[in-house]
Structures are given as structure tokens and as C-alpha cells.
Length: 125
Image 1 (cartoon, rainbow, N blue to C red):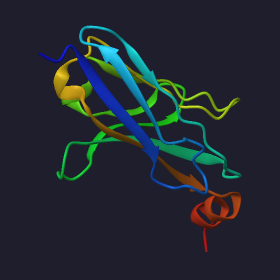
Image 2: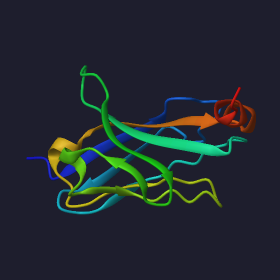
Image 3: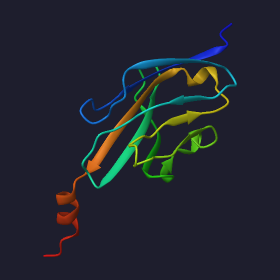
């Protein structure tokens, strides 16, 4: 019987997200952290983590805008967490009390707003 979950992770946007493809194997019941760093000149950076099981569509886990600001999907709230550290441009995903059902591919994705887009958005005409 399997006692470990295999977590693969890769970036959804190679240009901006410096997450090398990798694999982590960890014992069931343990804790694992998947790392993701990003490159962006944007003033607002929205970082997302998704989980993809087999051939299913990727499932939204959480988004972070700064530190702990953002959303976490209800089904992941209990064991999945992340804090965005904009000073080192990092948004690690921490999974606790690992279960076999956590075996999946995890994607880190970036959505960034540049200064000009923000100014334009807030511009009143």
C-alpha cells in the first residue's frame, strides 16, 4: 500500500514564473511545501495555485495578492496555505496532513497588472 503522495508541480507561465518542474514525495500525514518564485514588473501581482488530478480540469486552490490577502477555496482551507512574500517574490504552497488524494500536478500561475494598466483603470474621463 502507498504511504506517500507524489506531488508534481510546474509553472503555467514560463516567462514570469520561475518554478522549475519538480517532484516531491512525502509521507502521508506529513507536511510538504511546493515553491514558486515569480518575475514581474507589475505593481499588483496575483498569484494562483491550481491542482490537476489525472485528466480533470485544474482546480483552483488559492490566490494571493499580498501576504495572506486573497482567497482559498473551501475544500482546501483546512490543509492548504500560502503567504505571498513580495520582497523575495515567492508564494510557497504548504500542504499539511498529506493524504494520498493530494497526489496530483500543482500549477503556480501569475496574473500581473502593470503601472500603466492600473493608471488607466483608475483614470476618470
